[in-house]
Length: 469
Image (tube, rainbow, N blue to C red; front, side, top):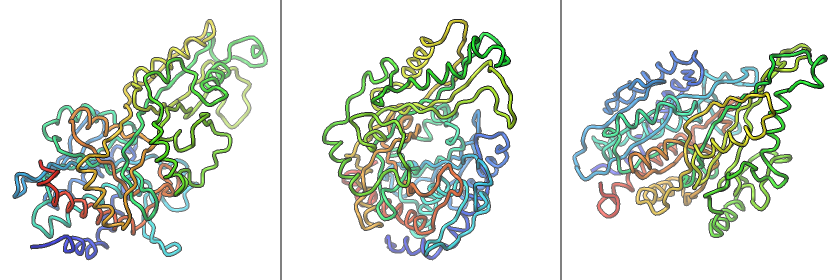
């Protein structure tokens, strides 16, 4: 009978092809938030379908109101008691931004040796094409050696994660029976360090909002009317500046209603983690908004926040233009913790703005939906099996961590499918995700694939005792 060493050997033997295939996928500019990316989104979906079909995971490209989902399901295994495993990844990527800020072309990846590390650069190399490729390659290797998959397998690859997953709730509802599973593995998260894996057990919720303030007049000459007419930029800036008090607390009425403070035991656990490494990397926090009474890590993982993501209005051109603008717009994001509901926070923010609007001015808001915070059980049978598998590959225990980020799918799967979720990934803060020169390396790619194989083995070993389907 083949064993895990045979599967790991197959991964090592075929690793050159694993890298080459991933570079093909990264080279497809599947940008979901720009209309120009539509054709390449379709091309990436076709590419993934072909690769899944090739490993006997029959795949279909499912149209949505936005970009398509690639959905693959395995044929039944020889053991009806095998658990049902679902693997999620997303194949869309962020826009490039200013190409001049890239020192490596964003869609021409190749392996480069730098200080003994073999890296490859490209948009999506870390977030998140390398992540989904780890579990696909692990499934390929397992089937190549064993002749079947380690369990009943479903693979869901989304094409809209980077633009807020607007079509995903309807897709999940329409294909609920196809997505039923005992556990959903979400591969879109960070390691604790380059040598220590992690499992994310606490994620924040997310609300996006766009607000535009209109003056009673269109654009005016600022020399004539600047001293007396309403200036939407000034009005909006004043409102935004007042969202936090001098102690860093959010001033929106009812913003903290319904939430519990971070338990002391959790604060102590996080304080120990913070001793091991810095969670902020090379980021200078000077001048930031720090809520009084909380450490940086506690603020990032356990406290709700509001951030101004952009503001525009008036003269945006290269030349001088003495204009009193007729409108000003800002985009904001709210990161929520357990006990906060997205629509409640949205309405409280809107009421906050409306109460501070001068007479004669108008306001328009844009935004809907959002996701709630999720706290996952650390007693999950699949989480424990995953932790053992990760430790077996990396030689050190996996850290159970929180994050300031949001993965709406986790909430949707937990609530709508009532599935356990395990959030694992191999991204590092230094990978420059969403930034110029996004990158990854071949060592983590290889160990990521091997990690999934060890997780499969742990699930198989314990399925009779505590992972039964």
